[in-house]
Length: 299
Image 1 (cartoon, one colour):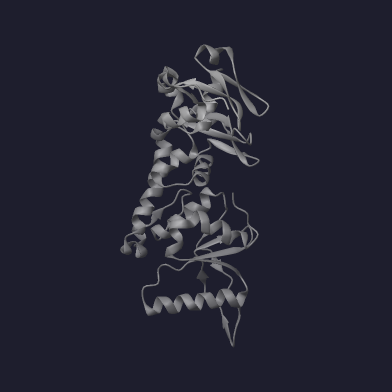
Image 2 (cartoon, one colour; image 1 turned 45 degrees about the vertical axis):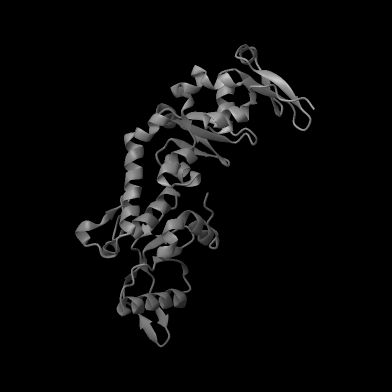
């Protein structure tokens, strides 16, 4: 078996030395004309050969490209053009998963859905986005220059989301006076940071929703007929689904109110999604599953 030449490394190994994703390095080298895709393999161009690229043979993996270790010091890898970030990298400092970050970028109008991938919009291109394709699947996605972190609209959106997360840890937040309502990304004014978190999740996911919509209560409930006006936390007109957040019960009276409301939903045979405090940190996992139970597909 032929050995890899001394002081020569595969593109993946060079990416590791640069502390970058391998797909980003492959994409950059392809964009700059150092390598080109032929079928399922990468081939060197004349430019790539000039920069020191060569082929080596592996018994298991066959022929592949290797580079001299000094290539990592090339100005190409230290220039601003290389500091492109994926949605995952953009979201990491804020503990936002790639799926949700893409939805945030979509809400900003920078990308739009394309089958199972994402296409860059004219606005996304204007802020410096770059359209790329996944190496193995060919699915389109976008990458972003480091400077996009400082975009005013992007920062304002993330700051509003992080403010709500900070408030969630404060018990007093659960009963905010009317003059201290939490503002949501879609303009809704809600009564707590917890409700703001849910509202923002629905909005970013592209799900039409109403806040404090009345529940249909003029129905026979046992031997009594309920005629009082009761509002839900959220209502999804697509699917006629109601959402209640049960994280604000702090007294026996609150608990009694919760049980009475649950009985109303049950008696009216309404579609209900119930959330509590433990769900707030994992809405990206919890909500798609709960919505799918009511035939609403997210992502």
